[in-house]
Image 1 (tube, rainbow, N blue to C red):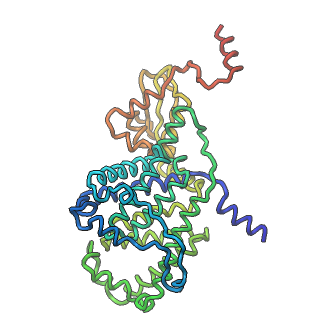
Image 2: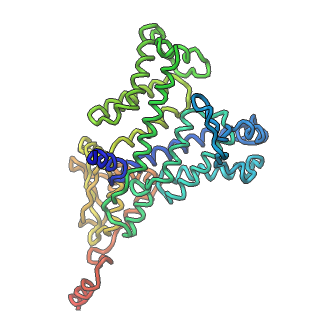
Image 3: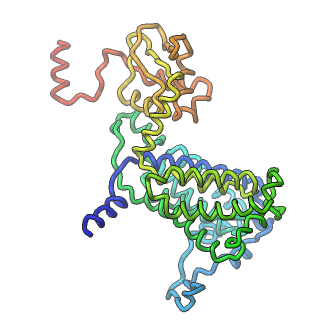
Length: 425
């Protein structure tokens, strides 16, 4: 029993790489950004007094959080009212379109900086506050994907998701303030995300099994008859009885597996693949904006950070024909901190930097052909993609990373500095 409890404790609170949390932060931040940009087209209609849902209506429509539970627990009553996080209600922004718009723009900016991992802690807090506030401001337009997004941005607030795959880490490396080796973190926040995703699927399966149409295998026929869900063309044979049975029972099987078998490592890859296929079909056939993308962005939580890093390494080996070697100008070398930052932008390991002897940066590809050093560097470095397309910016970053090959590193301890001065004399 003690060994079993120790194993459980190690799973929930053991230490590991923060890479997985960094990947989840990028995905969730990106889809939060896309979501708010999409809704901004009809901002007045959804979030102002001139729209469909005035603030007074939104307040009355909010769920009653007085603690009353329905179903088998109807007898249970909390002795207090559960507070809600809603800046629009607390500060009167819901009735003031200008202030609501300012908060909305701040939320969009926070989604962008969260995706980039810039000022990560502050960015995730602002994104969470904004997301929850606007979901409570108009609950008529949110769906299951929005609920998942809201929960995940709250998890990002408590997770050390800026320690990897982030601008914060790159800036720290560039300035020489942090070690190139990734820190080890407690994985409890990642486990919470994984468990919550599994719980979503299991409870969905559980509730569906209470419905007659899911049990008799006809449930998936009905959504295709609703015009508001109609999206892209689906072959007519998909509405025939054998395929309706297949899609209905297949959905139940995938959701049950995502809630249970997902934690069995030998089957994890196949269960996730089945989940991706199911959501790909939903995304193609039904008009539920971003639902499939948001829920699938949480799938990396079932992988350790070391596994994600190894996956990128193996992917880089498959793309070995795209590898390139870049040489610095003569008499110049990359500063240790800057070199660590630039190399951290290349998780596939496609670019090797070497001290050179030419008058300028030089580069050759795997076929030993001369290529543009700037283009070769940033196009092969995934972390450089957000800025590399800006004309001249990556060249300036590369030049800023250089120092004289004979210059002191600036990281010598006192004894080493004395020895170096003695050698100079």
